[in-house]
Image (cartoon, rainbow, N blue to C red; front, side, top):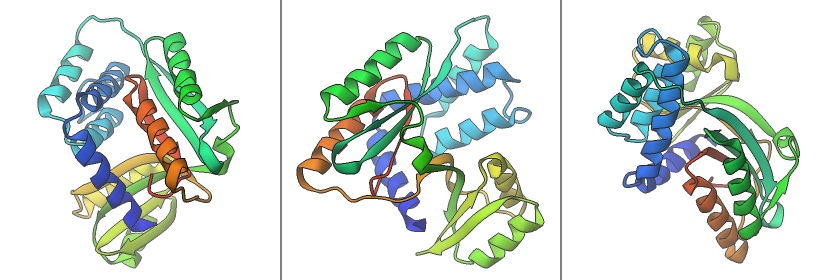
Length: 238
């Protein structure tokens, strides 16, 4: 699975490069992280984490700075995290994470996206029990054993380390993702391709033909919603 992450990032980055909605979503996430703590990424690890992810997605510096400046102001705008679960065609499953200032609007939009694009909303927990929450770190390299030892010495709860085609993928317990990133940085690794908390499916399915077309449209509609931060699926390649 190791190379999968680099491929997904490359695909999304190409799509996101000209997508102002993606910049806006990161802007909200940066604002929320800065508002919850110190607006200085050097003293606010959650904010630093979001900024690092924004840079990986090629979000311009002025977007990042604007979100931080907004958090320093007197605005009282509040955002609420949400999670929705549902089904697409032929056994496909989706988890939709949101960050919104209007929960009613977001719930209605997500429900409509499923209903109008070949999907069905499920109850809370109807899909997520078939996914595992893990930290994922991807960077260039080929010595998985050394990285595994390094992380163990740093007391990181590591699930697995994979090396494939010049790329190393580290899977950690979700609570130890930050610790893993710090340990890797201290060892001299800085150029991360992915640093994410992911919902990883316990098994994947492959879609083709009309099923794949319907599924892709459903994911596109969900990701286009300004309040949707992340869509996780069990479909290979997503």
